[in-house]
Length: 124
Image 1 (cartoon, rainbow, N blue to C red):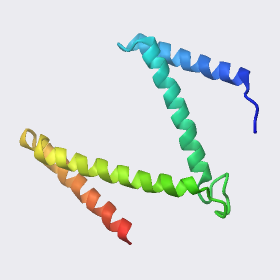
Image 2: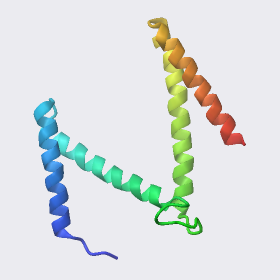
Image 3: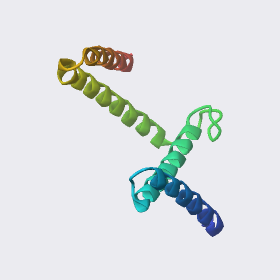
Image 4: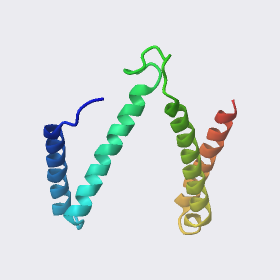
């Protein structure tokens, strides 16, 4: 297990503070909210990078033999999230935005076709 590096944590928090200061300066967000958002974005970026490197054929798993179990769970979760978001976009575009904008109907149809493609691909 690696030791906690205080210098690296201080540098990371300083970078987050500078980015949050810039964001809060040019938007209406309070500094604390911007700071927490930047920290969350950095943590999420680290999690995504770790996940990508654990995929078969990537840096941490070049031969694809030692894929961690969480990778399959994340893949299933991501599949259902993308499918739900696509179906939601299709339903919203067709039923709500479509009555106001002609473009809403086309976006809804494209999202519905995409959702159908995702479902058909999953069954294979």
